[in-house]
Image (cartoon, rainbow, N blue to C red; front, side):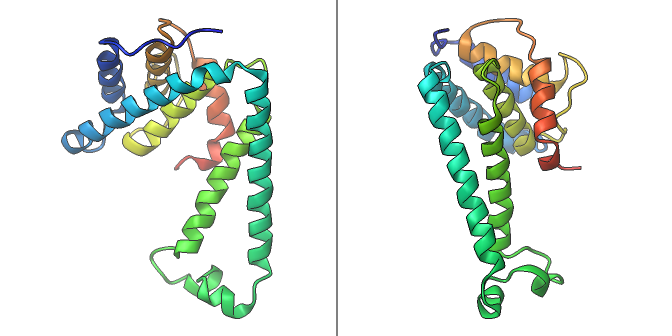
Length: 197
């Protein structure tokens, strides 16, 4: 098992590198928020790394993911069978077609679809895949979707998406010059339906 890299002065380099690659939409106001988010993700990855390589932890993650998928499916089925009055109270469907904003329940259902997609990816994760690389790529995608004006894309190892994933991987493991392009491509394919046009 690879030990996680310890916190060091390279964290600042990693945070700065990721922030630069994100090319945030509103530079000044987002820079502090991005730095905080990147530091938090690195700390979370470091605290989780030992568990990525434990078979028992991987099995538990898959079982939990499948249970969440089942629960979301059950909720969606229940919502299809509610009374017309409850349907209107929850502001579901065609009732609000003219509204500019989706109802809170519709936003929840959209978020649950995202949760289901993540859980499905966890349940389908191949045992041979380097879980640290995979998770660094997922975090890179999440950071790009939240903070960057650019859409995650994989053209080369030098693309912002691959670079951010590589910087996170280096910051977490201490291993330099790792190509994460293949894993970036794999994650991009799995999550293509969740990406903005």
